[in-house]
Length: 113
Image 1: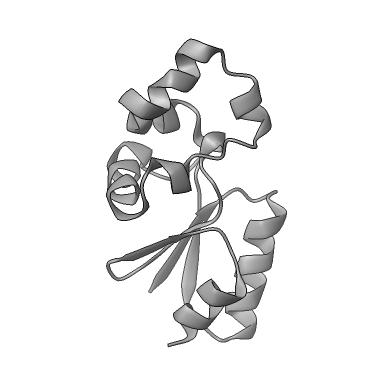
Image 2 (image 1 turned 135 degrees about the horizontal axis):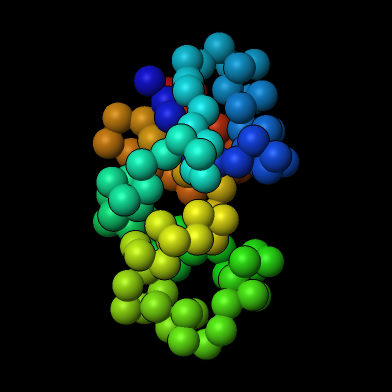
């Protein structure tokens, strides 16, 4: 089973879900603000892909943080992401033990295998 973590209003998440449906791949969508157990999932994602890949430093949320909060990306990224779910790059896709962040042709091809 493929788990897609994202936001319902995120265009990239919508594109990923639509492509998975078109490819006939069974998946579930989990809203990271309303449904996800981020305290449990974020450390797993950080171990798999690292903070640089998981934290969206181009987001409006990131630009709204002060320097002290931004510094937490280096010292405590898990807590920063749990407190600010919209800082998570989307979508985060889990399949078995594999974790990917974002949506691209490479991700789509890997999920089709």
